[in-house]
Length: 153
Image: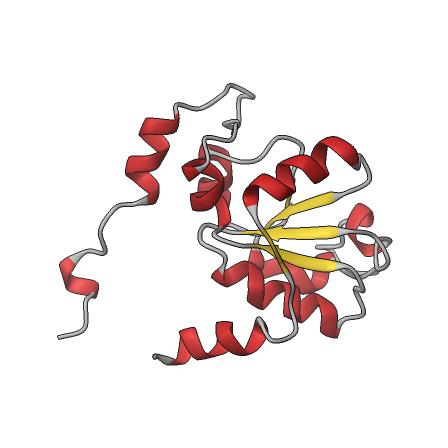
């Protein structure tokens, strides 16, 4: 297990996860729920869960508190609100949820399997124009192979 995987495993000792089909149900039942997508802007623009709040991982800490240029008021005032953090596969979201817990957020969880799991369960996603995206096209992009030059020699 590499260092990144160890960090995720350690984070998941403290961070609860929610499965995609359970999150779909929660979204329908709880309009107060914050679905926090921490992926990069190009990932979010291509596909995201309807009504999710986009805060890239690189600015998350500043977005979570007041008095920063990155502050997102809806997030900074939500320390006791139900929040589910979303990324591509569930790894970055677990680490981000742990960081948010350390910052005082009490009800923050991670989407197990991430957007990949959401898509694998044929759940609807939108692009930046608000159009429903083609599940098959997304599947190809989400499951692309790691380029050979990035594989361990």
